[in-house]
Length: 303
Image 1 (cartoon, helix red, strand yellow):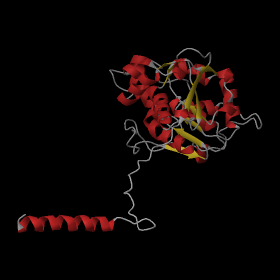
Image 2 (tube, rainbow, N blue to C red):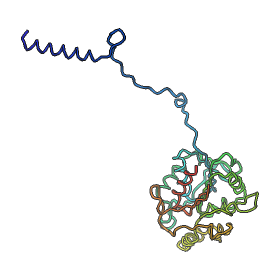
Image 3 (cartoon, helix red, strand yellow):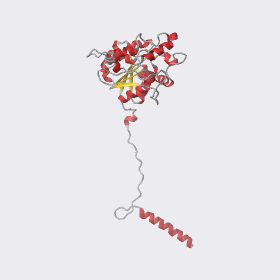
Image 4 (cartoon, rainbow, N blue to C red):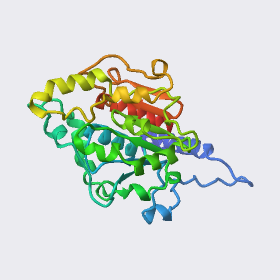
């Protein structure tokens, strides 16, 4: 072997001995075998394998008429509530049959304008496929104590009167209000509360609450713009919503909050700037579809 090869062999032997010296020694001086790497494996969850899902965070009751409710004021709260993990239960007077939104808000009220925005319309399309929406329970079968929150949507077309005029529905709403759990009402939905009496006092449940609703200037402007074509479509009742709600309050000047003036700008999922709601304890109210996203977010925060 040449002198060069000997040097190379000695060098390899030195490196091998040095690495061996670094290995930990067991008791008695024996070298320990190198440890094997261990990969942690999560324990099996038989519930997950059986399709188990954790229960929803809360159950929310949304009563509706058979037809003509506002697309945005139903679809947006529904979508944001279920995304937050909550269960939404719909109820109609007779139950069992799929309710229908105001068709003009889907096609465009006047020359394709004044209707719902694309996102709420898309969500309403999703909602129409939901079992809870396709087979709502009956108002009379609702057990208020089984729900964590109540949402009262609005709408202005004639079919809304079934919902707004119902003594049966108001009795259920009064029972839920007495539980002191979150209640949200938007646009004409506030009329349900303005017409609901506290059985204990005989007064409107909103008598001492701060609230908003569809402002008179909005309702009047929409009516004047469309009456030549649609008649009283935007006038659900001869009395304006704001006027009836204000008359139910002990001090309308102190309790009714109209909010900043707007006719076009709407809030969105990512922009609450144009939106407006009023919160008074567990009660949340809003004016029109342009407030629906912020309205839903405030309700979710209550839950």
